[in-house]
Image (tube, rainbow, N blue to C red; front, side, top):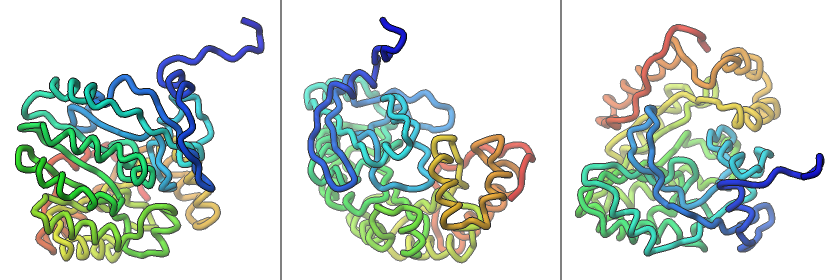
Length: 321
């Protein structure tokens, strides 16, 4: 190998290089991704899932705070913007998925959409999430969680109803704010908050267990009681059973996009964010505790439950906002 030759690609980066172009829009390119496995074993202590499924790599919603941008680095895509402009659709293998599903034991948990949104725009044409959901109809005795911020989830309400007859199904819709203008700044290509809440109404109206999460709570931007209460109020009206919210955690990959966004839209907050997130991605101390208490009070006010796995352990007293 010469001194200037690029190192050989391995793992997911090699698979990504073997994919082919599917289609292209004005700002987004779609590519296929050869896939060895669809079900990923989860061993993280931070989340209670046994298995995760992400039909896509990358997400074109462009949320300024997204923690999952680092996943594109595994494919040697170092530009954080590539996460929202280069979307990889995994190559579907119905027989292979069915074989993997046989290894999931009764009582275990499968989470769909833990890193990228399974109902992002690519799904309208690729239908990978629908194929997964169709296959999950064969499952029995599992706990299956869906997380999305897309109203497209309501398209598959008939399938989710069938799955719920044999499994415990919980659907979470993310709504950080009901303010359309603010949502467009924070999540520029995601469906409007009112469309998401309409999907909650459709899904809950079908008898499905639906939660609304106002995560992440952005300090000094979406952390007011007025904002969180309004999200919970609309969630309750749409038939959601649960409500929750977590304070923003800012991984370095997300900070590379989030801080330029702050400098452009909220320049007066830049110094405070840099001071609070200088040493660690998670905030500790009285601020997240205050947000937890506020969220609990809002739940009680509207008769909403919390999700049994949503609380993060409290950390030491380090920094305050």
